Image 1 (spheres, rainbow, N blue to C red):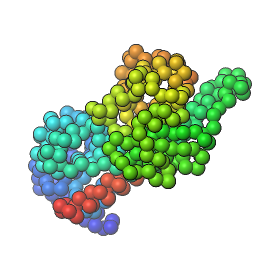
Image 2: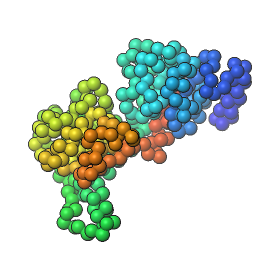
Image 3: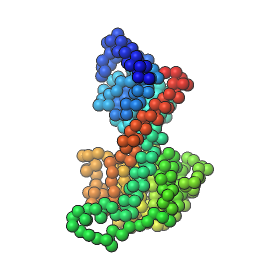
Image 4: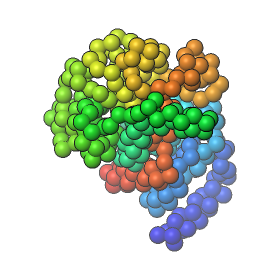
Length: 342
């Protein structure tokens, strides 16, 4: 394998010299080029090159620079650096596949890519365990006041009664979206003695040993915990708002490890004040990264709330998933190569 990779690299070096190729410079189109614009595990490059592809690894490239050279590539590997919209797709005249190093595809214009015959590959199998574990961790932390209790002790305050928690056993956990992520979360919960119900608008007949398929009405009526595992689309944007939360029959713990724009943060804060949300674990927010996040009208209240646990969009981004995502992408690329050839 190593000999094959070295041979391919040697051949690529000769081709680069012949075509006066320099990484980062617009160059003549070579068949089987893959542009990689984000940081990914090197196992993807090793396996792609073993299949006969030539990888141009440029994780620090800027979006406008990528726009200038994307037309020279048959493949693109990306995470969230930029939106692959019509502008990029129109100039990517040789592009035949895009690998998204993650699960969500909301930063890709999927219908237009499909119209142009571009195959889209994602890797939810690579980070579903990370997301499931992160969601469970957030839920346990919220239900047992870990963050508040830790801060109080560090400040010299010992408050047992104020930090009495809830047990998961016997609770009804509602999951919206029962794909890889929702199923992973349900599977992780299977040892806690909970009842898991799930709603998925685009799937039916998916009840299994971990969750029971129900209607949205049953989710709203019975849930003690609500966890979101759905993609961001025009239909799901702003789904969790004041009106939606109003209909829940019991106070809930809320977990969102999907996409920030699915949840209206102001609605969550309103529901916390009303006692409808007992605690919220938010790995994603409507606006992410600073300074933009600090400029949101709800940020100070969010920051001060003792009922909210925040993490910086890392639910699916572990040391383990970093490698597994690349392995999944490489495996799917190998299937594509078998069907169409490298």
